Image (cartoon, one colour):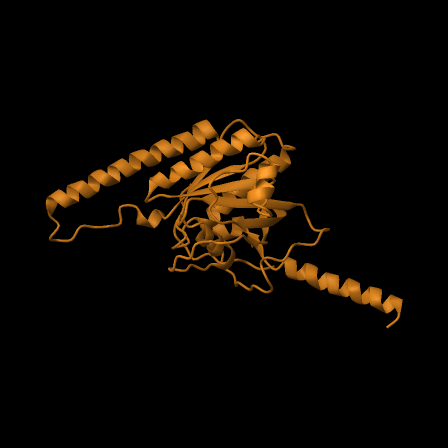
Length: 279
């Protein structure tokens, strides 16, 4: 093979790699309206995009153990949910291409093991969270369990550490309450009696009050986005990433100047079986 043939062959192989890196194109507006489609995934989700691709949007999901971070990602990318809980023990990355407001973004979604604290500087990140990309993320999704609002304290602490250790003015943060399907789902049996029914209603009332306080804190004080979803039933999972990408898209359109007002609350959608539309 002469040198010219070798150059042509190298360009051909590079083109094939680029095509594999863009296997998923998710039109979030279309999916949220309930549009169907077939899901076809090829190659590894952890293959780095080519350097000459569009600007990469780096999204990191953080949260306490067992709040459903991995399940949210897998529902979004693969429309898949596993009943078996397997703790995340290493970093996993996914590279869907997302279409929002007719803009195409290449997104790197990073799922990392539970971290005890957010690194205060690059040295601590290199020493303890090497290659996690925590401090240079474009945006964060902070996940907690709606059926266990105590898990919100974990992301509250992380968020406070983020604000203290890096400039967050142009870094969108979306707070997600997962496991909406578990809220007050334990219905009393016939033998439970009125006393247990009253106790269950009281517990639900306490939970609703805590949730209202969380929403008020997140939207009015943190000025962050807030979405509730159910990864198990794929309820509003698309809305999670649509809200985040709209926040990112708004920053792009305003040249990185973030509005002082929190993003408007998304309308409540109906449960549906969304599928990723592959271009």
